[in-house]
Image (tube, rainbow over all chains, first blue to last red; front, top):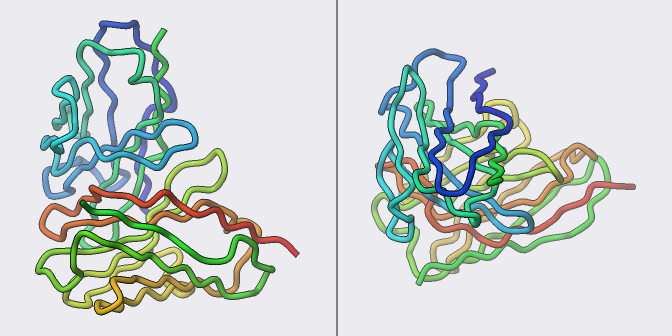
Length: 109
Length: 120
């Protein structure tokens, strides 16, 4: 069974920069896995942030950026705002089915 | 403006079959490239991808749940239906449907979700 792994939790100071990563048990993540990133706040549905590795949706703030880093998909938040405190999930494509990561709880402190 | 809304029972008994309906507006499931997927989230846990149906009736399922899931679409009603057989308390979760694209394999618009509890 394919497993997608994210950091369980990260902490960042307001105005700082933080990178979340997303690894696949099958090996290095490439653009062919079409990495997606979602933000979820308590009691809300997930909100799409990034698709196909690095593309922002029209509503995604520019401080969110996606990339591939060291064989993983990565989401970098630059100039973190207090409202960025949330759970972040990646989603990878496996030639048919897709698999979510376990999520990263980002604390802004 | 794309919107999606999930509907179905809030409580099902163990071994019963769950039927959920996703009713959407602002797009057509007959448009090339469009898909609608189902995702669930047990209380306090991570998201889990379940199934996806595309405009051309191509269907994809989670390998671990494939034997229990069926996804269908009614283009004329703008609806997608997910059935899950043999429900168990571990299937208690909020179930979401979402609009997606086959070319980029992403979900951009999500419904609000519906909580389904499995209990006798």
